[in-house]
Length: 117
Image 1 (cartoon, rainbow, N blue to C red):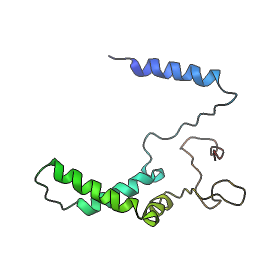
Image 2 (image 1 turned 90 degrees about the vertical axis):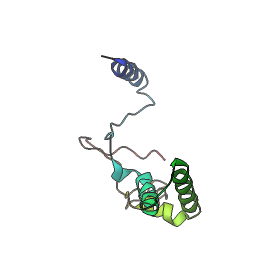
Image 3 (image 1 turned 30 degrees about the vertical axis):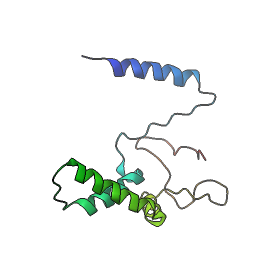
Image 4 (image 1 turned 45 degrees about the vertical axis):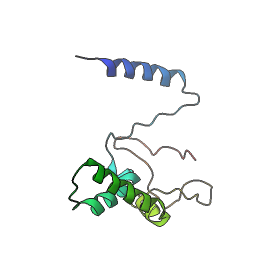
């Protein structure tokens, strides 16, 4: 059995403990697609190429790249993917994230992390 993760966790834990003056660590869920705007982007890509009958991997790659390029030039679509998470990149009146945006919080966290902007 490989204990590489155990060693990494120990080293990371020691680093976190040694740097608490300037470093705050928040445990986030390992899988949280509802907090990940790229899930919305991939959903759009998959919807576009879902019925593609590609002859080879190159055709799939080209179709994905083409759709990502189209999305890149549509900031409203990207903003929609971000809005779908409930998060925001727009500063609110206090210079922090939008007051209507859902705070980033993970199950089991006592409170939401402070704004990091």
